[in-house]
Image 1 (tube, rainbow, N blue to C red):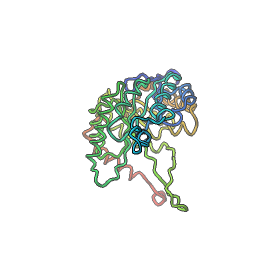
Image 2: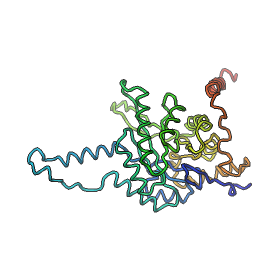
Image 3: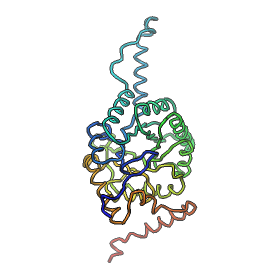
Image 4: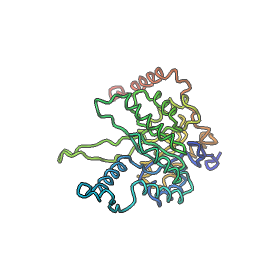
Length: 341
């Protein structure tokens, strides 16, 4: 079979995609010209940059302060609304979503980054009305308080997921961090709350310290293929345990066609990329797709769907024993300088 004959079409969140490669949230997907370039290079879908809860809350606080300005000086001020110039953060997000949706011929997925229940159900409905084909709910939380138990964190996250899934008229995928204490159990609860897909995993950007100024610095460190191991492990374990109707997407560490093949082999329905596209530009999509096609053809696979899940673990019951054995084998696999002499 020739590489060009390999069928890369897949289904993700009930959407038919021409390729399992998805451009995850980044400045590239939020810019109309780079979004066009990604679509032209063969990307299967785009995830827009996130609409952040903190941005909306800050704006609402500023608006409330403006509306209340002068109220203590005159009763008439209660009926006076100072002019608020410009569109809101949400308005700009929705307008950009509409522009990008009109400019590309691939599904466009809106991203909501939230930590609390509330108005997010409204925004889930608004992005769907603006043309989003699906919603990716990014649950990003650092539980730093000693007074908040793990069960409280999980309950709050599940309430948020359920709230958004009830309001959304399009499929919702939930992007999770890898730090829940019982990941398999929690993912099942996320699915029960209404999620149609799981995106594994959210990648936390860690701070650094400038020792000269003693300031905390935020640095964006792009991923490498080494980081793919964590999503590979969990997708391999979860694929036999979750319904086939629930989509799994691998994210973090996908840079080559072989990386994509590994993710498909353990059971991923889609493979998300950011760092490689930021490094090498939107046209790199075509190169990764060509590498994936070549690998599939070289190993006599007719389609990406045929590869999907071919090496995922079959029995969840043996999970702990499997992981312990894998852990011991990995430790014993290293042969240092002394062992080679």
